[in-house]
Amino acid sequence: MGKRKEFTLATKRDARKRARGKCENCGATLTHGKVGFARREEHDHDNPDYFSKDNSLENCVVLCRTCHVEKTRKDIADIAKSKRREERDMGFREPPKQTIQSRGFQKRKKRGRIELPNELPPPPLARASMENAE
Ligand SMILES: [Zn+2]
Image (cartoon, rainbow, N blue to C red; front, side, top):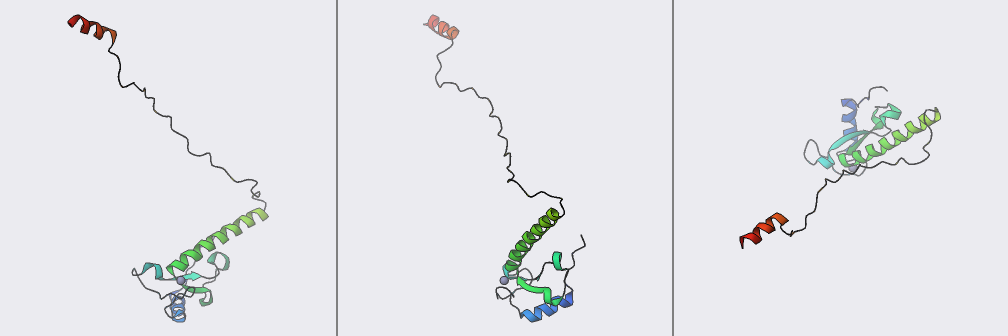
């Protein structure tokens, strides 16, 4: 797999101009740097880099951090789906027949502990000595 390419500075600058300080998805006013992290300006490949290898301005979307995270999650799912399909088409992978079930965590053996009754009669020897003392 080729190395992922990022947008050039010029592309990001042009995209910023186009977006006019707003997220191009939700319209939120964008921030820069560490202030207002959720609305921080980020750049996203509209058509994921994995598919398009397109770093043009047309494929560069200005998003707030929140929208970017969501979009990335969707892209990752799309890419994974496409990879699975590709593998299947090439015969590398059988379609799943059943869901994989975890064996679960193995339970630790409980440490043996003898439960003693709260009140024990004194052992016979002690009882005998007590009786002798009286
Ligand atoms: Zn947004």
